[in-house]
Length: 259
Image (cartoon, rainbow, N blue to C red; front, side, top):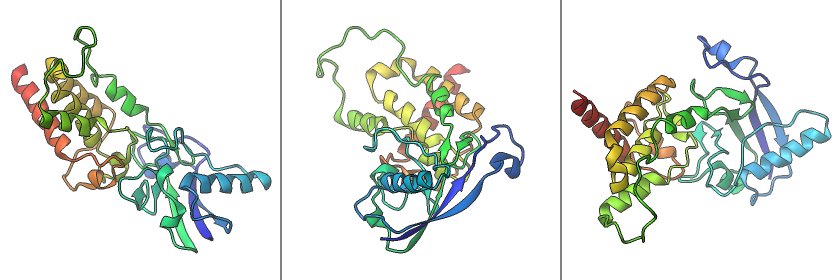
């Protein structure tokens, strides 16, 4: 099959503190490429590999893009495809997306995540270390909960276990931020809060965790939620927006107890 690609190329990193769109994008631009040897069974990343092989043979700079596991686990592969984070398939990461999802002769637009908190490093690669810094502010259990116990030693209601597991599936890819018009990270942070608040080991630090994670999220420059659910729609792990309600409730609880 044949495809025409329009790919964002940017050789210089974005300025995290830029005040204008022009400064933020630096020298970025869309570049057109045509491929006529694409197999429908290729993954989207394999198709980019083929493109890069052609570019290298012609002595041109290959397209820089992030990837690691290529199994839908790490989330590093995330890009915006035709305006949708991770592409057209629901509950799918970019590396799990196959070219059979596009028609022969399709024009495909590929861009990096667009968020001030995720500055572009090069081409389709963005710096997602803002998520790491948020996690470092409390998305873990630091109190001593004793030695490892048998799975059934600590009773956890089935409903709570299911909610915790749903939140724990977050892979931190940033699709929720890329899809939100405000570049909000509330689905990501909500998943971290909800994961722990539904388990007995995580409830010891619930107030401190909610307060610190929300504060860190704001300091990193992420926007606010306006409840339009774009984040839930593009999340490759289909994390429900219920986790945002969990986060808001826990943050309010922490502020009330603080006073």
